[in-house]
Amino acid sequence: MSDDVASLADEKFVSLTTFKKNGEKVAGAMWLARDGDALVMWTPADSWKVKRLRRDSRVELTPCGRTGKVPDGAKVTSGSAEVDADPTETARVERLIKAKYGFEFFAITVVERIVARGKKARVAVRITVD
Image: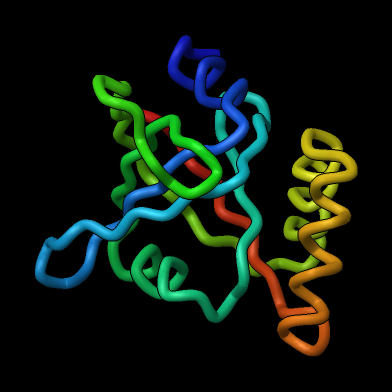
């Protein structure tokens, strides 16, 4: 596994940057887990990041805090992402995220279900770093 994958996998939050059609960057804080030589994320299927990734697989990953604030001088790692809507793969990635984040995962997903009034469809995102 590359040093970049290992380093990012150890982070609690990573800023995932995706790209709009006009090239503008859009970043947001994400949970992630390691899956072999790749990183995986779990996100709502109808999110704008998924729509952008289906059009343009380029991503940038940067360690960040819970709110997405990136520390000065933080390393930016480029890569490519693949969206996988297969329910088996999505469930497997959910288990990896749950194993890493434990009770925090449980608490956040309960709040999401209350706010969204139910469980939202999710997809897995697999990231390969350059």
